[in-house]
Picture 1 (cartoon, rainbow, N blue to C red):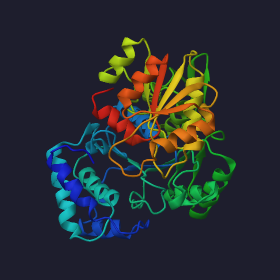
Picture 2: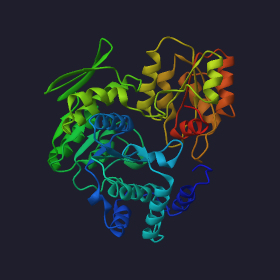
Picture 3: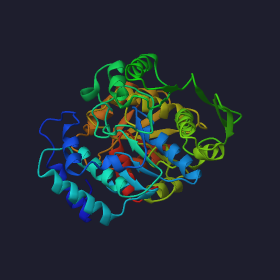
Picture 4: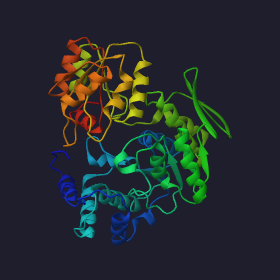
Length: 428
């Protein structure tokens, strides 16, 4: 939590105290509270429910852009936030206002009656209340963790489900193998509800297909039913309806080609017109993901040294591969990394793809969590992965050190907590 003095922050701090002593994934607490709230999910606009390991937020950003380009509206629920909790709940494209958020949180707190419930569960219930009480054409709902027993998986009949690429992450909750994790993600599948499946490894796809057959959920699968590729610096989307030729996505990175394709398949399933679909990739906005920082104190320091400054909240091995591929594909420049990571993540897997072209890593502290790796641990892991490393006491100090050592491109990454720190400091 931040040190902000807004009323909602005080309520959010209180809600943290309700967390169960042992973290057990279950729908029971959410269902109990929703029942006390007269089941707002029954009054929400049609839901597009999105699960996956990587690309959920970007895919939602593309889908939202297409819906809005068609002259329609969408509520959006994503997590975690970067700078302010309000980012999690958008009503018709706009961040929820402080007064409305505080009232909803207090209502949920009262109805919960002091019972144990996780922070995510009770704040998700608040989002449901907001969506039920405000008109829109759609609700874009991002899974928090897994899918099968996530607090978002209480929608009996979504309009559409989406599963973005599944990879290894959150093993302590979802399982140690790709198949086990895919099973949890596939828990959002519902009978008769079409699911758009983004690019998957075979082990994950096999599990998703088996679960879909078990519950009679039609699948539209990347590589089988639709493709998205780059041809002559254009995004080309193909499906059974034909071909769409459009500018490359506004969100940088080769991985966004796949995310845009998944979103376009979802828009097609929603019967969004071709003109709006073609506008979607170029209109999407998703801060903290391969974001070039061009304003704020850190960006000014970098600009004065004629260097690029980038920010990304990616934190698992798949994200590391995608990020490394993106920066390796840019014009060659001396790259330094500023990194913090949580103890629940795999720093070796994340950092390994950068070995060989990242000149140095600067390990820095991060606020808002007690679960960050010690700075020396990240530095040691980076050295073992083949990236020379050092320790700095702040992002600003690390940036200045990198620039002094000749860095021409600096990437701040490793956790959304660090991305939040950077954005809250006025950088963007």
